[in-house]
Length: 230
Image (cartoon, rainbow, N blue to C red):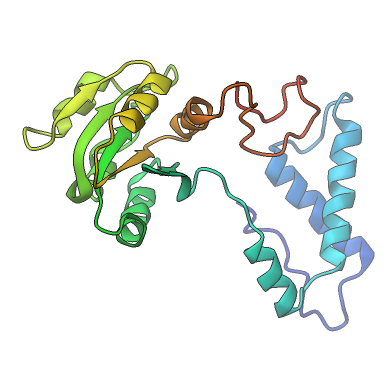
């Protein structure tokens, strides 16, 4: 996305403040998709440039800082184990490459368990290619739908063929809860195919009366921050 942004490190002499701010401006433009902000967003746009420039001035980081940062990363919906009994894994893999990466990690996570797959996907995705690397682990499947662009659950069910029992549950939260409540001994639940479905899974599995916050909201609660509905 930012391949045409000038690299500022290993310069001799070091990059100037003017060069750092210019590169930060390009980064914010790429990230926001706007060359120039509206009047309403002008202050936030300028603050973003200042924040990026400030971080850039502290780079490159020492190896210890990189290790500490990676150790503290929290990435909801990516190989996330959200329950242990039964084991419930949610992963936002929504293309064949993502599914292949997920499949490579499953043996270590599953420890021999068979998978109850809860699957939904957007209709314009290569969902046959997404299912292929996961199918060797799947004992049963529950297909559902999320969003207006979702693939038809009946079509998804047909893709499993006759070897994998498939249940269609149209409501995604009910699909997740049903798979978890119905998991048998030696089975794990895997929710995959869409980040929208991952959000529904977090909401479905939240404790009663507890807000299901996937990410720290950018705004205060109730102001359309990045929160899932409870």
